[in-house]
Length: 209
Image (spheres, helix red, strand yellow):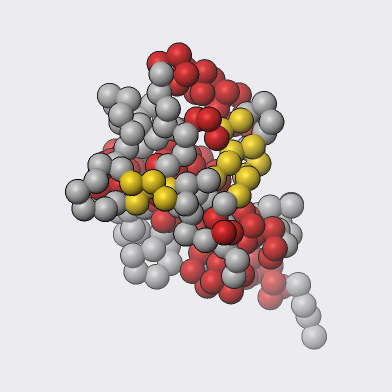
């Protein structure tokens, strides 16, 4: 689904396809954390396996990575108090994360998002890593749409919650902003959520005068 220039909302089918085609690459975890948890890129890069608890069914967001000149990786708290949050782990990826965490622990890998050498992904390089992976997966813009970015993964996730969750009724506003790590529903709706064409059609066809 396309939107304003420079923005790309993925459909649920596209999101599933992208995850399937990028699995096994160093871009997979940042994409997964964006599409299935709505994490900001810095939050994904700052996520340690110690904060991922599949047994308890929760992923804890406590820090983010920012890019500061002269520093390889600089960790800070989330942008606001609302950014400190516990995200429920979707049941369908619980086993996947359990296995991935076990493998990481056996390899002595601390961070969830790492490069092919097992080193933590740097914020300066992650955009290129993701672009290369999604382009190879077929999301290369040749159909006239934008090449999706980490920001688009987060936007797509929040739009799915608003448009498809709870059998199509969507989630309540306070739930949406809690999962987004926002304190302002207006900002979340303005910048991250898009009404889908089928939702617009359903809305206008639900009334008759």
